[in-house]
Image (cartoon, rainbow, N blue to C red; front, side, top):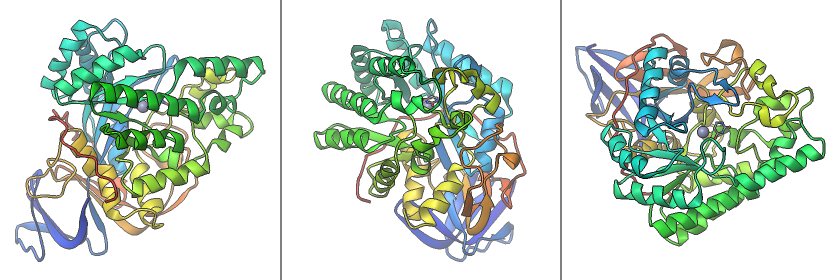
Length: 465
Ligand code: DUC
Ligand code: ZN
């Protein structure tokens, strides 16, 4: 592969930026310095461009079975979409379906990743625990051994959810092995009652979706999780935090000493719940859980990213075609839920976040790359531009324009919630372990992605950076 030198770019880390050259040799970064001159290296002028560690997306769902169908992106297409958007490492959710062991769940995910492949960015999985018993408890150690060092639990969805006592035991066990779990926080029984209420009122369309899953029921579940985490004296991650009330529960718990991490997703920063009221079943395109919230919540979340309250911005990428959405044409609860996002996150967050002055490049680096690498046990191999790190790199040109459209994206889905959005400041080049995979904004090389065995989480939440 040889040597490549990125000349004169703005090198970004979570704690600062500097103009420097960056030398890649084979799969690794070997030097970051001013005025590197190596006669054997191919030079690429990066003047005025931002050089980020490749973005990490620790929340994707490829090949996931939802509401009687399966996500339109599998590992092959999903990892290609990821790298096209500057994401060089994804962590999907391996899932233990009912009746399975964790090992069987993990094997199923390996099989899918291998069979669908080749994969175009590096990947790993968290393991979703949907049944808890002494055997599963012991298998947690096997998962850690296999490099699956973080987990996921659900407080909703009958096929996945654990009860409060089980959640307590999971948290305690994971603390023992220096791991933690992400948790989907929504109050399932009240949501069921609210769904019933909506249907009794004759509301079967997408606009009933946010009414049946209010912010209060997300906040209640976050509160409960925080209390359980405090009792277990164990760390926990709230995935896809959507609103001010839920965020306040996290802030309150932290003040009481709980080690609580928080993630949000672009859909909660850019889209609001008025979209569910669009006519002609258009609102179905935006169904996800928890649902989109208010413009006020969007501002609260942006401020929380800026002040370091939110640790990560992932995507919850989980996409369905318009035809698939029609499974719920007569009943909003049958619309497969989830939104595409793995391809658009880097561009959206740079253009609308950094470009519009909402967050700094350093902050973007933390929430899209560095914090995730530390939390999920791959730092500084990934999430950093240091000698010895993988040469996973996203080069962003702050003047590059783009109009988002599903007509010409890599994602295997015929719709994007950001259709027609104009961006300024987009991904130009992407390197995966030293290989140029995206050039001039176009995916030019696929199939180089590998499974990554992760280490234990090593991260401390710090606010106000
Ligand atoms: N929410 C969604 O909308 N889809 C997939 C899983 C989830 O939690
Ligand atoms: Zn999810």
